[in-house]
Length: 413
Ligand code: F3S
Image (cartoon, rainbow, N blue to C red; front, side, top):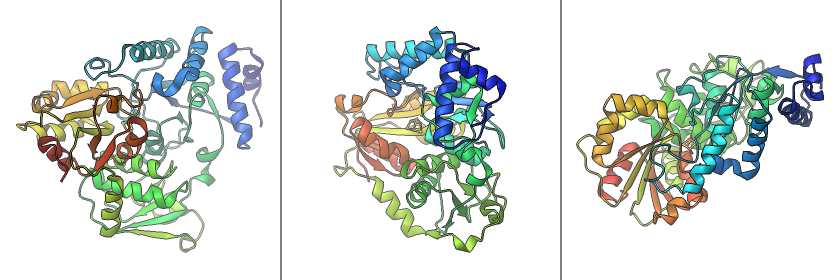
C-alpha cells in the first residue's frame, strides 16, 4: 500500500499515539482489502451507544481521548443507549446512564458532535456527491452511498474513529468507481402507497440482492427522503446491501445505462416486485400470534420533522389504550422543532412518548422484556427484525395507521 510522507510519519508516531494507533488500524484494514492508497474523508459517523460499543469499545475511545486525540474530520454519533431527558421514566438503569455519559464525554473531548442519531443527514452531516466518508450504521451508510452519492464502506468501530483521527480511509470497496455499478434489476410493479410499503420493498430487495448493488426500475421520481430512508434501512437489514440505484432518482443512476456502466444489462438478473411479493414480504416479518400488542415503536430510522407532523395529525384527538406503551423515536434536534410546532404536545396528549437520541436496539438488551412487554407493533422492517434478538419481543409489522389502531385497541388487526 502506498503511503505519503505524512502518512508514514503518522505511522511512525510523529503526530502522537492516537494518530499512530489509528493509522495502524487503517493500514491493516487496507492491506486486507488490497487498497493501493489512503484517501481523505469529509466526515465520520461512529457508534454512539456505550451498550453497543461494549467495554472494549469504550476503553478504546477513553484511551484515545486521554492521549489527546483530536478528530480532524467532522465526527457525529449514532443513537446512544439512553434518552437524555426520559431515561429514568423509561427504565434505563443508572449504571447504563453513567457508562453512556462517560463514553459520550470522551467523544466530545476529541471534538465529536453528539448527534446521537441514525439519520445524521437530517441534522447536518450531509456529504455531497463523490465525497468519501467513513460511516457506521447500515441504514445511514446506504443512504449516504445511494441517495447522497457519497462513498463509504459498511464500517464498524473503531474504523470511523481511526478515520476521523487521521482524516483518511483506505481506498477500497465502495470508494472505487468499479464497485459502484448495478449488478441486478428489481422491476417494481406493486403500487407503493406509504412509507411502510417502501420498507417492504426494501426488505424484498435486500433478500434477493444479498451483498450486491441493485437497480430499482419504475419508481416515481417524486419519492420522498423519508421513503428512501425506510427503503434503505430495510434493504440493509435483510441483505448486506450498502448501495442501491433508483433509475431516474438517485444521483449515479439517471438512466439504466449509467447504473450498469458499459456492461450489457440483459446479462444481469431481473426480479419482479408485484402485489403478491408486497403481501408475502410484509406477512413474513410479523412473528407474533397472540393479537395483543404491548408496545408500539415508530421512528426507525429516526423520524424526520415531516413524519413528526404526520404522526401528530394522526394522533390528534385520539386516546391510546392505557395498557399499551407507544414510542416515537427521533433526534434531539427534530424533537425540539416538533416541540415548538406543537407536534409533541398532540402526540403526548394521546398518550405516546417522543424519545430522542436513542432506540431499543441501542439500549440494554432484554430491557423491554424485563418490563413485561412481549409483543411490539412497528411500521419499520428493521425494528421488526432486530427487536426479536435484542429485546426478546415478537413483532407485528404493518402500516403506520395499523400500528396506531393497535395502540388504541391493544389488538393487532
Ligand atoms: Fe435507527 Fe435504531 Fe432503527 S439505530 S435505524 S432507530 S434500529
